[in-house]
Amino acid sequence: MIRTETRMGRSLLSHFLVLSQSSPRFTPSLRSFSAFGSNHSKAHSIFRLHRSSIGNSSRCCCSISVTEPAASERPPSSVKQRIVSGVQPTGSIHLGNYLGAIKNWISLQDTYDTLFFIVDLHAITLPYDTQQLSKATRNTAAIYLACGIDTSKASVFVQSHVRAHVELMWLLSSAAPIGWLNRMIQFKEKSRKAGDENVGVALLTYPVLMASDILLYQSDLVPVGEDQKQHLELTRELAERVNYLYGGRKWKKLGGRGGNIFKVPEPLIPPAGARVMSLTDGLSKMSKSAPSDQSRINLLDSKDVIVSKIKRCKTDSFSGLEFDNPERPECNNLLTVYQLVSGKTKEEVKQECENMNWGTFKILLADALVEHLHPIQVRYNEIVSDSAYLDEVLAEGASKASSIADVTLNNVYQAMGFFRR
Image (cartoon, rainbow, N blue to C red; front, side):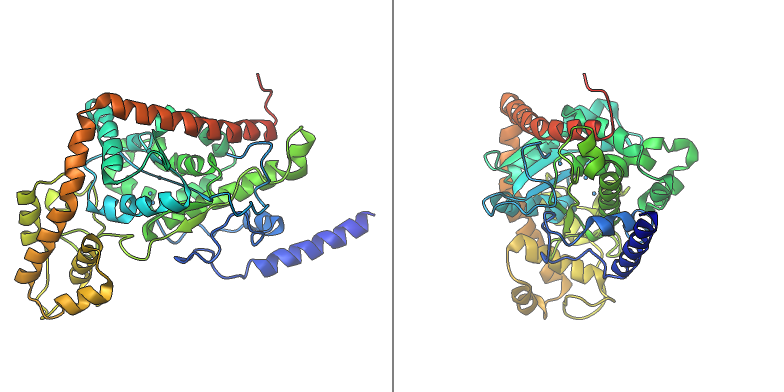
């Protein structure tokens, strides 16, 4: 009997080694975004616990009840896949946040079960202004709504209002190898800039909190930019690790449902606008933390400020305008921004702008930005002036999110062997 099991084990290991040679999982298409599919077998998950596939990319921000189907089962067609995403309430929400994330949420909420939250717990990983955090959190929620998030279709809430986020983070931390976290590129970059004395443990461990944000809601898809895929890959690896360590028959012996504890989410990468670049450097991402406000268009910038920033933004000395020339990153970025805010196709923008000079195009771009952002700014002012409405939206969103998250959290406690009160 022992020899038979040994031969089976060797055969299974050989199968893992074959599977490990498969192509990378990440893709910007909707090829197989369903986490219910059987493409990622339990056998494959076991092998992946020991390989180091989390090292070549960078940062950005789920529940199943005991009566629901296991994560490996495909749901009925009437069940919507779930998407979660969020933005930090630090600094001003800018065009990169909007075009790279929030604007895409608007269409997603019509097709998916969506939860969008303000990730205030992530905002304290670096020094921050305690006097501004609460206000910035409310303002970020108001911007979500002003941009078109519909609370009849999506839940909007504050991360810290759902305590399961922090609880699950601690449980996941016990299963997260420190080597995985040490490989995170953003930790290396930010810790190097800030210095060891100014870097807290939270900067190292926040990818585990991000994993908690996603896995709590049994998310099928997570909208991410190209630079955020490394952290989502860690989330996927951590989900598979916990499923292997505590799920399946081990969980069933403890009175649980058995099977996978977490779904393994897939990335959803929009075809354009996933990474809007700085106005002062076409090779750097538009960022809240950049020291110069000239580098970004904030969603609440006035008309005069927008015109001034576009007039002064970095360009080049080439003639004409064109997409996708690696020698012209600023040109490609500004044309892409124009395409997204004007609602035109890439081909339409190409034909319209290919023979323009920079002076003419900058006027066109500034006008398009002002026209696109003005309704958002008007709606934002209406929302922030009605604090009772905003409080109600956030309370309802947190209540719905908690009802989902608590089921997942209870399942994890049970699977990990805790004595529940």
